[in-house]
Image (cartoon, rainbow, N blue to C red; front, side, top):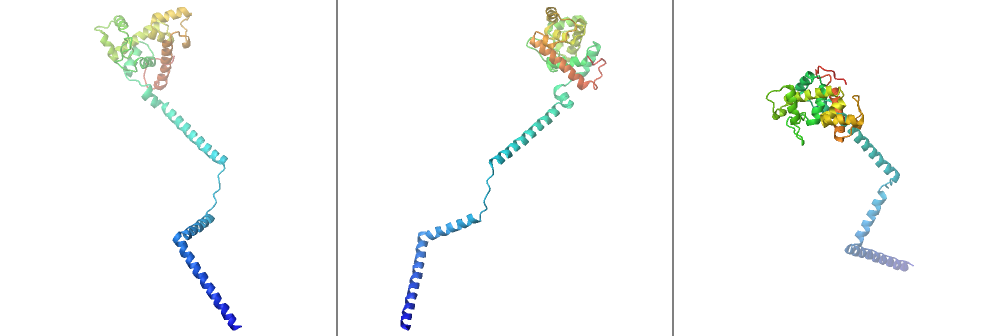
Length: 263
């Protein structure tokens, strides 16, 4: 019995040694071929995936609602910005500085007062005629700040008894304003203080204005700008009267006119 047991033990030891030897050879072979490294890498990747937290997918509806909220918020900011810019632009200080400037104010007020003309109307006429540029010349040949035609200037100079008058005199701001205010006073008298008819006559001529009055049955109470048949005169009258109101609104407490500012 003892001899049999010894033989079986020796066989087990031999088998164990063979298995260890085979395992060592297998590991060496795997290291050479790289299979062991790949296997270890796969194990590590699998372990990382197991530890990685699962991300929840966002629902499409919630994502779209978030984008919509951002767009609405951006639109609100844009509208608020535009309103702020508009309020700044419409402020009196900005309008007086960039839109309704009033250079040569002393000359305009002086000659308007002398001829019993609304100085705010004179300022509006000059703004529309020349933008206060003394050297302005129109394609038709009108000259100066109030755009007086040379032949009209000669007639005004004779009526006013101006000595040493020449066409070049129309380029002088003071002379041009003086003659333009005198001419407006003539139109005021001729058209019975109707500013619509006065501005039509200043733009299109006195003869055309009387012709339109006769053809359309207008009297001296006329006040419908839309009824003016000539588009240029219609736009001119509308623009001048609008600007006159703006000059009055902006400067009524800042200019000693000596005349009534109300219509």
